[in-house]
Structures are given as structure tokens and as C-alpha cells.
Length: 120
Image (cartoon, rainbow, N blue to C red):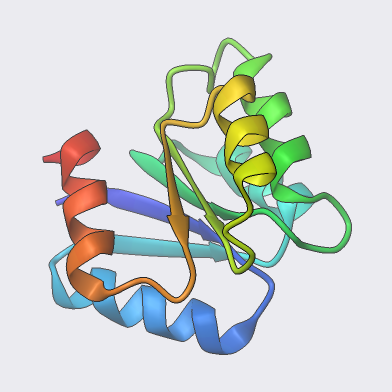
């Protein structure tokens, strides 16, 4: 299955996402914010990133901008996560180049269906 990077600062959400993905056969890496995600990506490739918008250090939109402007990662599928579900967040993320957008909390089914559109 796929190697998925979860970029999320809230430990409970990290655990829920991680368990859901691992139980579906995916390998999971976790970063607590955007800077940590960039460090992990430099250590080796992943197949998809799940990225929270609101985080300390470097938020998800800034991370997405970095990924889309870096030829090593500009084709990496990125699914944005947010608790707010505001249309403005969604539109900004899509304009920057997000491949998908999920509002937390999301069901396991919706999460896995969204991921499988990109990594099979």
C-alpha cells in the first residue's frame, strides 16, 4: 500500500488518522507541523500527504506553497484537512494546488475513499 505523511499538530487526530490508515494497510509517518514535514520529506519520499491547515511553526497553506514550488514535491498528492470547513480555506488551498480537501472530523470511509483516488 501507500506511504502517507500526516501533518497534524493535534495528538488525538494524529492517532485516529494513523490507526485508520494503518488498519487499511498503509504505512504512516507523522509530522507535527510544516517544518517537520519538510524535514521528513528530505529523508525519503511519500506517496501522499494529509495536511492540516492550522498548525504552529508553519501552517498547512505555507507548507503546500513550498511543496508546489519545489520540483521534487510538486506532483505529490496533498489532501488538506481543516476543522473550520470555511469556503475561503478550501478555495485558497485549491488555488495553491491542493488535490483534495476534507473537513474534520471526517469519517473513515470518506478519508479512505479520498486517499484511494490518488494512491489506489
